Length: 329
Image 1 (cartoon, rainbow, N blue to C red):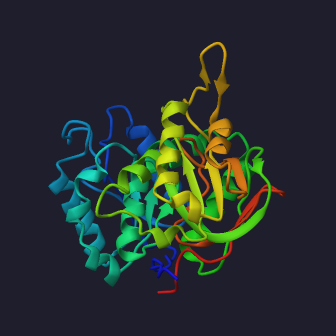
Image 2: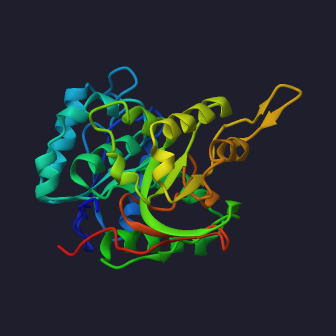
């Protein structure tokens, strides 16, 4: 069985730092960042914004050079006062500094790292090397500071605040995750296994590096993935890449998030959407597939902790966390 490393549970009043491990803060996003900070404070935490979360600081599409990004991240990992790290956004630059991260600091003082998109590459790489349970979850700007404020139902927003607070502070299983929309069963069945996944194209990218997830991490796993601004043809190709390298032969089930700007293929004669290509890639695997689950380049995101055992029931269209994401400090 693969070893997992649970972060230490947070307490009310602990320091959470909003950082820039990938993309820079764009001009005009300052109000979103401020609202994101307020939402984290509503969860009971003290919040500090790191120096690199600044529109004036950037290098091309990133918040800094790989060395600068790694330096900031390593500083947060080594600082005993910092109890969690929240990415302010995703981006395109995490791949540049994976080999500069202080893995010993993670092993010595595991902390929750929150984010999605390019941050899922960080989650998967650190899970591969240390077993760290990363939280595929909302980001500070367009997540906590954006989509959370557009939820019309105040009760739902309170439910999300409670959900995130519990996943970060309680060394207990969360149980069933609350659906906001209607989840879809693309393949029937029910399985249990550790959650593994993130942004699909980042998973494929990672598997070509020394930070690839070992194949045993996929044994009996519930693979979750989402995609953003990518053609159905590319999704089909990425799924077949996972099939050819053996990943899809090992997993027990699949959970598909809400796609963003993924138009169906349509040449006037044939039409194919994400459901079509998923089922096309899995003709010989009768595994359950649950789709349109609340995560991805949309907000609010449900928190999905890598390595934590989940119950996937495509018949009842539920997804439950069977273990805590954090450990008592």
